[in-house]
Length: 461
Image (cartoon, rainbow, N blue to C red; front, top):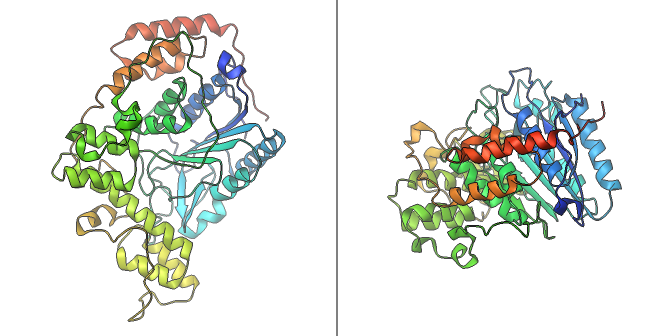
């Protein structure tokens, strides 16, 4: 059922009002699952809705959608995007449970009953169908965020689902983002907000950032908030210039992080010291960057975590290419590399579909993957359906603090809070700037001054 997103301010910045794009958004927070309520998605959806409205988006908000309600909502948003014209940017945020099944991602409605893996395509909504339909609309581009990579209570049988979300390729003029890297899940959080929504809202609010920079900084911020236990991911083919907020001309000069310089961002990983090398690799978020870190600092305290990141990414790429090939030879090739990997049961189900033997013949054509086989040191990380980046079984060392970036981030938030936007959200997440309680007091004061001019955004029942 569509619900009211109460208390969402509609006051937009001057920058958003003057933006050349038409901006529309769909924000869904599914929390009231029959298997047990999730503590953060409803609040996360409200936080993102507030932030997008401040950035000039016309936001449709919904929560706790059953299957029929979710299908109708997605269909209606596609119709709205299609009618909005070619100068439209569409933003979609889905928070709740996400599942991967046989090469596709699914978003789970609150009434889903998934006892076995084969129930997934019947009970959940395949995200690929929606993203491809959205990309087929002629507009400036679309941004699809799945805050849904969680350890789930579904299909707990002897044929489990692979954990987290599967690696996907965005369509033209599209950015796709996950709260946790493909094949991994975010750690449980008590709330009231999830680390990913918290970080994404903060980064959207920073003025003058490109779309890519928003998600790169979100990844660093998520790592900071979770002490490395969660690493977000995104892939983009969004080619048009886009910023959520322009930088105000009277804003104080920003304190520039060492990673804001293009020359530094292309600097060899080995030329950084140990601490900054890890964050340089995390900023680039490429398999090559992580491997360069291990080559330079194989005995660093973060080496085990980086090996886990590489292991998850290599397995995700291997499975993606296996699924695209979709032949018995491909699934035998995957099983040869990962005989106990997270996608074993997906591979076996596809072999059964082809009426092929589970055991390969003595000789078969092994497919050529874009990544080499995993070294023995990686196998420990992917010999299980679900991977956490803070799993105590792996003896992870806590990552170092995020150098000077955090201080610069606080200052940027302060000058944004002087603008007449809905600001209470920052105080609700005040762990980001405990050393500056004055900012929180000014934010509360601004909220009180703007409350009378704010209106409530409602959605169709």
